[in-house]
Length: 174
Picture 1 (spheres, one colour):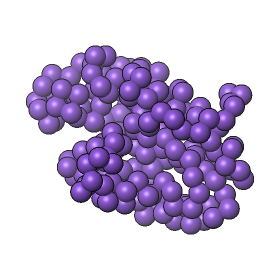
Picture 2 (cartoon, helix red, strand yellow):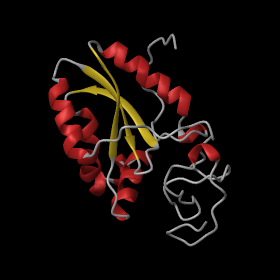
Picture 3 (tube, rainbow, N blue to C red):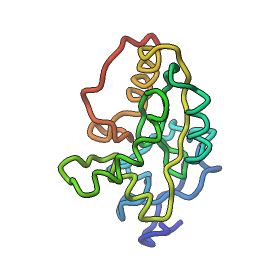
């Protein structure tokens, strides 16, 4: 199989991923690759998240969740692979897109999450949203957020998420 961006050869897709869209290689800064040396390594046991919501439906979801309920969410590529996990209230999940537009002129404030969103836009793709859970307290949402960050790992530590270190930690019993 060939990468649609750089026409490079892609390694075979693991059987667990056979139903997913073709992978894009990390040699051309594609979305995700199976290259274990590349920046976007994905373990075979990681599965795409479902269901994915587009911006408009995610906005409606946030509206109905209300301002008092907290939630954990994932920002995903069109392949349903998360690249950022967070928690928040109201429209926090949607704020990353606005934030990325704002920091275009402020390179010192950019991070890997913004670069990933810009990359998607450059390839005529959108950010997709997956809501992991809805909670009454911030601590409950943060527990689930931390669980997924630990499970999937940060890119800076060999994982797939663009989350930076130093987020609020809450004890997790998962």
